[in-house]
Length: 200
Image (cartoon, rainbow, N blue to C red; front, side, top):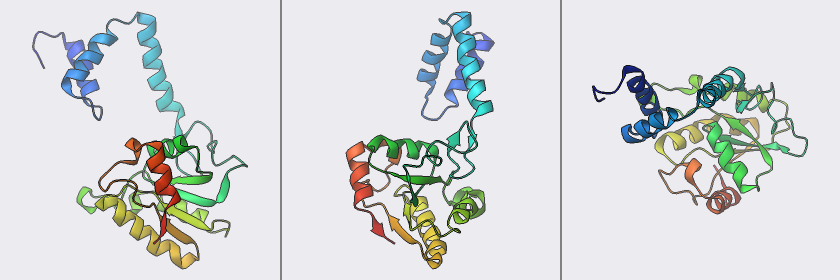
């Protein structure tokens, strides 16, 4: 960081640069923009970050982000509670909801199995998923993890422990490019992948 920047500005730039997908130039632009805000606007921005951090928690059912004990999807009577779409993170739920076609529920793993990164099944919300399958209401679990090595490994692991429970396990069809991210897929591609899913 340039020495001529005041220390508080340097710290602000470093904070923005620590965010995923934000390079140093974008971090500098954001930091300089923040300094053009009024004191009230800056306080509102900071308060929104703190409020989200304090009030957002995991849904007790699906592990998605919510500000209630149970999220609006899990508590909606019009959703098909016999189908669970398993995704890596909350942003993937947003991607599916954009299609406006999927009417089931979700389960957020909050990660993928990745031995190289020291992430095993115990670090994911797998036990919460299995608890949801215990009442016999769920007839299908859709594996909607990203088509990466970690995503495939996680889907296969879950399939092996779910199938003996008598629940149908399907995988998204490959309208999603291998190595791609669900978050960046367009609505039509995502819907076609969902529509043409295969049993695994």
